Image 1: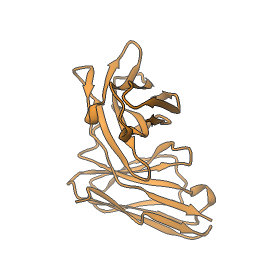
Image 2: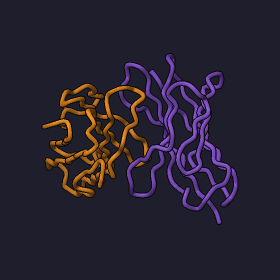
Image 3: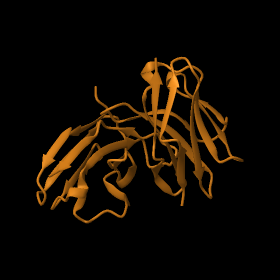
Amino acid sequence: AQSVTQLGSHVSVSEGALVLLRCNYSSSVPPYLFWYVQYPNQGLQLLLKYTTGATLVKGINGFEAEFKKSETSFHLTKPSAHMSDAAEYFCAVSVAGRRALTFGSGTRLQVQP
Amino acid sequence: DTAVSQTPKYLVTQMGNDKSIKCEQNLGHDTMYWYKQDSKKFLKIMFSYNNKELIINETVPNRFSPKSPDKAHLNLHINSLELGDSAVYFCASSQGPKEADTQYFGPGTRLTVL
């Protein structure tokens, strides 16, 4: 069975600083990987996803993530944090034969002025 | 236009009652899902339908019954509500049931059982 681990339930950065949110997955078959963002009292919005091909994936709002098979990681980064980035971020995985997302426990990003 | 909509947004009810949550998508997608988000923000799949056919039925109490009258709608009926059912329930849809398909989420329904 596949699983997702997000290291750090809370991450705090200063405005303008690098954002790094960590995600590691476990899967015996090639995974499809997703990052979603959830703003307070809202649904989830896709930031980016990796399916096949280029391992560096660019998403919306300046976010990107790199799929590293050797490290079973899919960390999310943004060069410069903005106050509007404050939200809950979820990493998720799906695999062939499992037509639903398995989510990590989420990371709350705080951006300090 | 709201792509995936849910009603109601908030639902407060007593233990033992029966309630329904409705979901509609106007994206023309074939596949719809119900997820439950608990108080610790953990999200877990409950059900999925593809073209009105149930394709995922996780270990969920049989008090929960999904119904898909057509591929644009997926409703969730809950019988004999319990305190532990309090959560946020999200509906989602995707183009198809493929694992790489992006899922689009609704705004959620916050259910509080007293």
